[in-house]
Amino acid sequence: MKYHQNLLLYGVLAGLVACTALLSGCGLTSAAKDESLSLSAVFKLRSLAKVEHVALSSQAAAQSLQYATLKAELDVGEVRALLVLAKNAASGQQWVGADGSGFTTWQGRITRYYTPALDLSRIEISPLYPQYGFAAAFQYGRISAPFELDNDTEQRFQVLGKATLYYDGKQPRMYWGKPTEMLQFSERIEVPSTGFTHVNYYWLDPQTFFVWESQQKWWPQMPLISIQVLKPWEAVRYP
Image 1: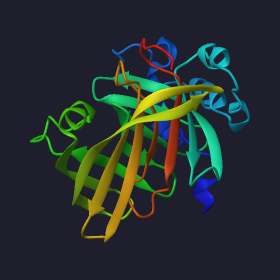
Image 2 (image 1 turned 90 degrees about the vertical axis):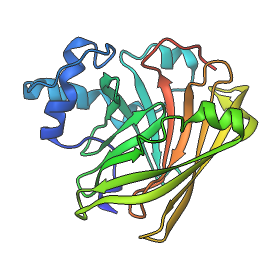
Image 3 (image 1 turned 45 degrees about the horizontal axis):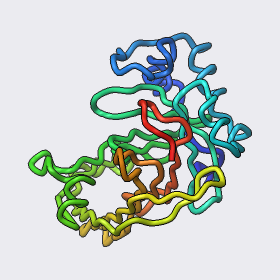
């Protein structure tokens, strides 16, 4: 589809909000206020996420990046791009790319996804299930919770789904040519009203539970997004 080309920013309006943290380390601080910025600041952030910067072959190259950065692939490698951290807050990290799309993550899980053609404006596990997460799945083997999804594009709101997170054990992974072991979790997504089911995957550091990689999809029209953290937004050890 046309919006799959290049990957990631929400347009100038979203950029004006998302780029708040650009002037304070591009979201590397947790206290960021939403403000309107000049177009020059918007374009500066967009330029940091251009597709041609994707080829980072070493850990040293990743660590040398100026801002917290993700590498993303849509639909198993069809599109690759970088996303730069635009805002870091208690509610999650907002990531901005170079065209008209982006997403928000919280503890490694996507909580919003938007392109010029699709806006999943809210993906939220029920607040009644605060224990849902990797620590509980690691302890008990699996944990389930309902979630709600708002789709502004299709004008569908409070769509109900169910998420079940499983701990799959330790799995070998490669980072910058170096083998390591990560904790693997799988997450079964079910949205009965659409007939949609999917399995997401996450790979976490065994010591810190930091999510270094994931593959996520929450809606039939949403592409499968593979994410790898190149430079984290907090102080954690590299794998």
